[in-house]
Length: 250
Length: 250
DNA sequence: CGAACACTTGACAGCCCTCAACGTGAGTGG
DNA sequence: CCACTCACGTTGAGGGCTGTCAAGTGTTCG
Image 1 (tube, each protein chain N blue to C red):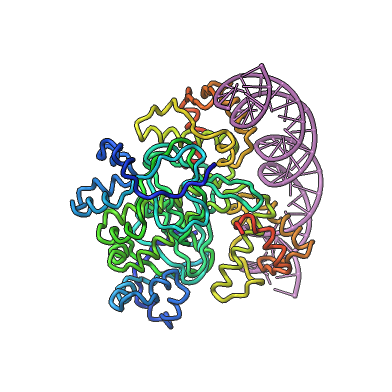
Image 2: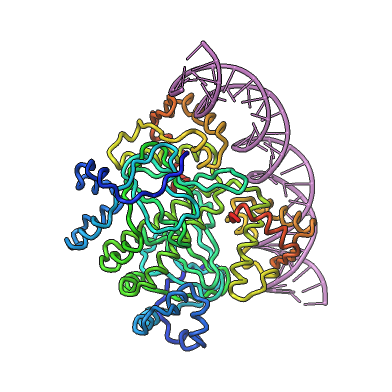
């Protein structure tokens, strides 16, 4: 759990990046970058803005609550957990962030990060200076739209788990959510590895770890899925979807 | 519960508006409008953008889930409830919006309103065309910053009630929140009228109406507050604050 | 005055948390 | 190769908070 500063641009890391175009296609800003409306000069400006940082390793702190905010970041590889720590030391998991997703948006108001971000495995990031990005957004309507859209979407997402759902509905919604987000990156939607511990899942869903265990056991016994340690296989996708539907509002 | 379209600018209503400057000082965009950095021409542009709409009356629908999104609105007077209706007809209250606060921000992503907005009493609004406001924001850095800030803040707010708090903590946090927001508009922080029904409060807090009743009764019995129908008086502010503190992260 | 509605109060049950013990797999050192 | 350790996960028993159901009270409005 070593403290790692949010490092600046690392020339060595970038040299290893491989195909930048392919990278962009999975990035949260791909819509903005690749939209036909955006002129070449602006696109170049955005790419110059990017700083590739990492790797972070499991347990590394990417930023901490209270740190001065000056950048948002897109996850390029790995999984990031965002959480807050109560005064009594108890931790609240706010969310998990997979490749292509953006962290730090909730820090714009307040100019400080309102939560910690922790790497769950080996994480690579693309860092964007927010002041610079704001200036660019003023010149590039497509980028401004994209930022507004990402921010707006997170408002709705945060409200999803606020309902008074049962433990089964919550777990099902979590699994469906992970499945969809991984599938969007080309992974198998019905068989995947969870990168986070049971305790993290439980904490995120506002359940006890024991309850998550019991729900997974019950779902396995009824043939909805197969679980082997952190590998999950959705056997009866229709049933799981049906359980998750009210939570996801479908 | 009559269906009312989101009306266009009403010249008669505006004629009754009184002091526009005072109005602006309580508006969510006052920071943007009154900031010294904003040039006169841009300020005028923003004012021209405003359409005063209303009045809406208790039960009137301001917009409905699925309506095409083209405007956000600042509440000028009254209280607005935002909510979604499940397939089974059950309603989920997402939030209450007091004068000076903005509704519609969560509609930017998706281009449709993701929830209903209902007037709880007599409501007056200031309507801003979002496409026009975006264009203006590109020219006026202060306005773009303000929009980013409002969006970012709502992400954090939505996550507040997602924790696994007790009924007492939830009710206390609700009362403290209302108190602060009303106080910011110049009302008494320790004695105020709730504009929403118990059922709406309970629904918003994910509790049963009976539980809200019981908690209020208990708090009254222990001297924390006095309740008379919808009038609430905070008698032991320190205790109520202490109960609400973990929910509000203080 | 009566009806509709909002709110309150009480009894009971159910879901999930807490506490405790046990099982399992990965890493380590002998 | 095996024993040990430790973190993680699972399983079981019991209790508390809150939801549900039901009935009663008070207020507003026609």
